[in-house]
Amino acid sequence: MLGERFSPDDPREWLNRAQSNLTKAREGSHVAGIYLEDLCFDAQQAAEKAVKALLIHLDTPFPHVHDLGLLLSIVERRGREVPPAIRQVARLTRYAVLTRYPGLAEPVTKEEYEEAVSIASEVVAWAEEAISLKEMD
Image (cartoon, rainbow, N blue to C red; front, side, top):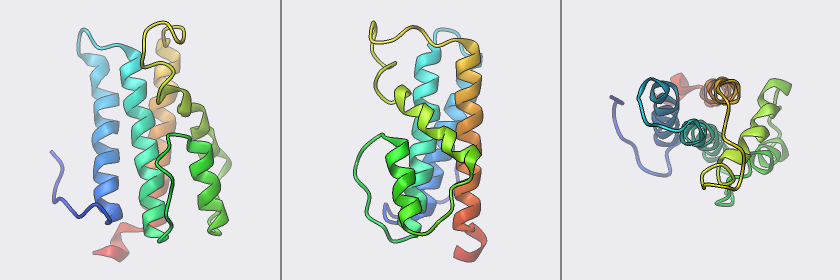
């Protein structure tokens, strides 16, 4: 269970939500009856909320979109470097819509799922470090 709740304009609340989505993405594979596509959606959402937490921390408005490449470009325009490993997050954008509905994409493989969770984990950790939660306490 997550700790304290914060206001919606506090990056800590967005990181809480990112961690919640990431936990669902990781743990859901152990539950029967859950599609990998749905878990990849949670991985995408974790990454999206983490990047948006960073944008809030930078006092930067963002569009309400799922396009992770676009959101990272806004981070860069604010003068923050985006490491090459983090740029991979743009690959998760497809899980925001395309794989959520039957017939729009091929079923997600176990390897694709594992990659999505790995990328999302890196992005959440990067955002947490960039925001430097210790400074906010």
